[in-house]
Length: 415
Image 1 (cartoon, one colour):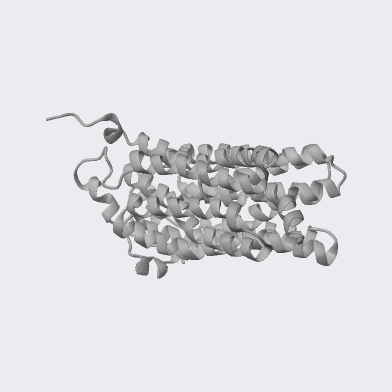
Image 2 (cartoon, rainbow, N blue to C red):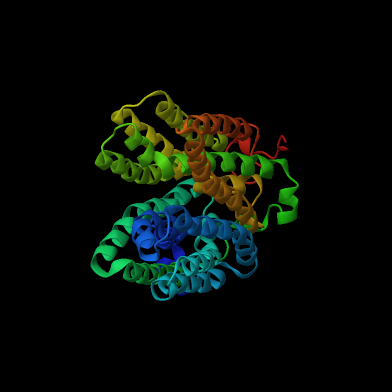
């Protein structure tokens, strides 16, 4: 029998393809480069920052609303059949900003369209492919995979800034769309695959066909515990990171040091994903999740109670660690509590909750500052929300599907 090529045999090629794809995923392209474009866009359209920022809110919300649909399609037709067209359309929409965004309204409309196509370039299809290829090392594989988002968070804003300086904001969007297509399309086409776990034999090979349907999941207590927990985590972490530079400069921290906090937050995202992935294969998943919920809670508390630049840097890292771990935690917890049968659809629902929290958190911080002149009230609310998230995660109970220890035995989730 002819031996299969290494790419077909080794599931870590899927991880490599996923890292490449997520480096130019929806978050790095749409969300984390956005701040670089705000001033050039407001100057170009003679508009205000609030109007321009509305584009990001619309884009993220539409991504969230479309993600469950993408998840259903991925479950039915496979990762590549859905992701390759989505990558192409997402790249074209990004390029079109450089050619057709002639006023603020046109920019908002095109950015909203980007959000629709970006739903196919979220972590969902990559998490589906990696979860199907791994069981024993699933946590580590997901952690490495999701580190691609952190890598893109560090690299793409710098790329966009260089492009703006060289060819203006229109050329920068054309460049972003080009990089998105050139990196993600070949990665998905040649390195990702659909199918059964490649290193398993016997009954375990059918694991991805076991689990709940989407309808069964939404009637399960574990689903609602996960959705609420990750909503509160995203609300707090995204809200804090979006306003961390403004908060620090308000306290007299030099702008350069405050901006460095964002870079630290991005690196903490990478570290958080790798660490959580490594731990998930060795420690009961809700206990791992608890650590990554309490980390941003401590960070918000430090920012609320202290004002020094050094402490603020530490706090930003703590918040970034929390935001860096949540995406692979969602994927891993779905696979253990709800199964892989309708993984894409269920992940889409929970990622919608995560994106709504991500969109709402920065708004609440801005609203709080506009009404009171400080962020204190919202930060206290974030701490309470993180406390609720920690409590909910501790109510998940034993694994229902897979796992390697006694806690993996089927047991009803506590609602």
